Image (tube, rainbow, N blue to C red; front, top):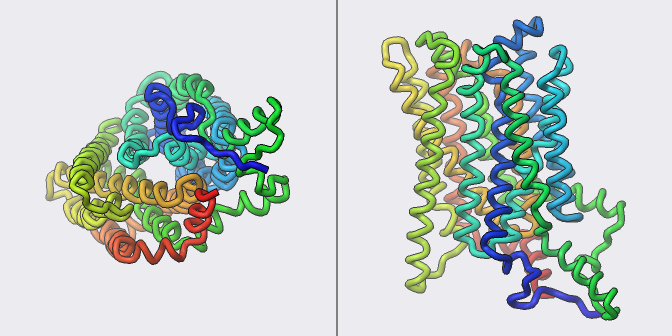
Length: 470
């Protein structure tokens, strides 16, 4: 048997597709991620209205509208990411996003809190696919690490920008005749528009494309050809035993995946905790009214924009160094900004905690959202790029492990937010989160110091290098 591969310049190789086709896929993927993240915090600005209109007896039940959606982020990647590396990206993305749209429609017409919570969980399962598959899609079509890194930067930025828009929009929408259901009507419209180009995107996963090519060549008479993926056992038993377990194996056996997952989980949980702590600060301390109380999240979004700018500037510096003949490792390309962003994130937590007092102007704590957004988004950009570069075609499973872990934290943190802030006070509650984040700051420094050693010990990295030699 003759194992086929893509020849240099092969037009069937996604690396060689036209720039227009690549950018169509990229923009469509980013739009899907934006939909997903926007929907995650959708009820945050209307929880009081939901509790009143649906006669919810306990406030914690309305908080579950966010937590259960994020719990769907935990469940979904278990299947979506590995199967995207088994059957391809396209149909996994289409089916999952259709699932998300259907249950978002159900949320808009939920008759009671029980139905709303169930539909939010199911919508979250579908919405998890863009979060875990998009990184793999970018690795499929962008061989240039600079372009891929910038696209991952946008992907990481909308992970923050999407959720920060929801409380702002929701706070004002609930004051119209549409009520709290209006936020779901808006999400349905946006998701529906995003679904159309998603259906037009082609398959990008190279092993599946090579399989199709091998089948076509055999049909044309070249009976001795075989695709690399056909050398593997593709039975249902293998899919269940190997493919579905891959994110878990990577989480527990790959030190990079484990440490990145834990770091991003801490800051992601903190971010979603803000959807409970911000009302405590700006409504209870500064007496902001509905709608206005969501505006401080704009500062967090501004920080994410500054983060993207810093990544572009760093990429330019790396290109200049590479042009001079300097050897640029994956660690040097991706992690120095993370070494800066970690301490900035910690500073923002102490800044916000100790400035949120009645005797200090509200703008002081609002401005703290800028370094928070910068630190959060930069850490996401750096680490997700690092993981994508490291694991390449298996990036979807690695990112799925990260997504499941951080979503579990994101789902749980809001549930104890008010108890923690009421018990410890704003200053010490924020400081506690800052101290935890401080402990994780050493991670990017450790990767930069021991990156080569980690590569030698990584089973998935070594298997990937062997596969490239086929």
